[in-house]
Amino acid sequence: MKRTKKQQALDDARIQRAVTGMVIPMMSIPALHRHAEGLIAKGVDDAALAAGVRKFMGASCD
Image (cartoon, rainbow, N blue to C red; front, side, top):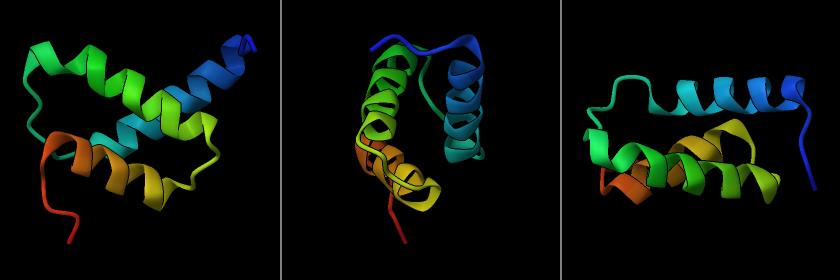
């Protein structure tokens, strides 16, 4: 299903909030973004999105 530009912007903002404060290697950004979009497609809330991103990057979820 194709997303609208508005929905894509909202999803991008959610991903940005999830990764705020994390140091992410430049080579990992595309893979991280795909992973986060997959979580959003599953309907996770913002807390679960942040935890999923941290887990993907190998950071502590505490």
